[in-house]
Image (cartoon, rainbow, N blue to C red; front, top):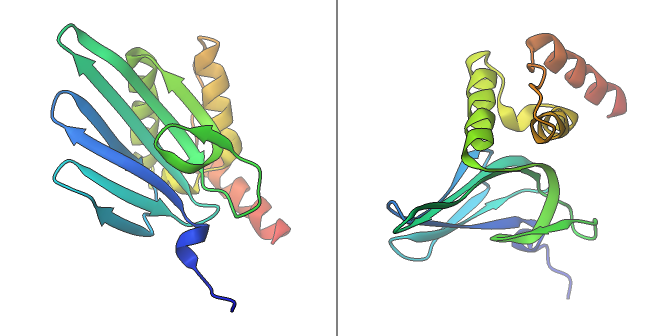
Length: 160
């Protein structure tokens, strides 16, 4: 018997929210489904090829122990992927930044993109790789402009 099980094709992200202790949240992306596990945990799922921003922050009695942001493309079944904590099965990691100053900079870049009317989930994947590489090297990334976005959309149309 053949079934069309859409949930087997989704990428699942486990989110936890324990105020001022563990805070995992989705910064952007189109959530395809959501399942609440309890008051502090839920699982959100993303369709193949969708892009999302996943932020993780945790602290203990001495201060912040982790701050990280990942921009991930959900993979299709059978496609190669990288593993990532709290993401099943994994994804195509477009950006992986840790350390609060750099994470804060990525969040500012996302805010700036949204301020121009561009959904960060629709931005060119190469731009996220560019941001990752520049911030990792301690350099300032180029802004993602409406012109760059338009060029990306034209390339997508040519490939489709």
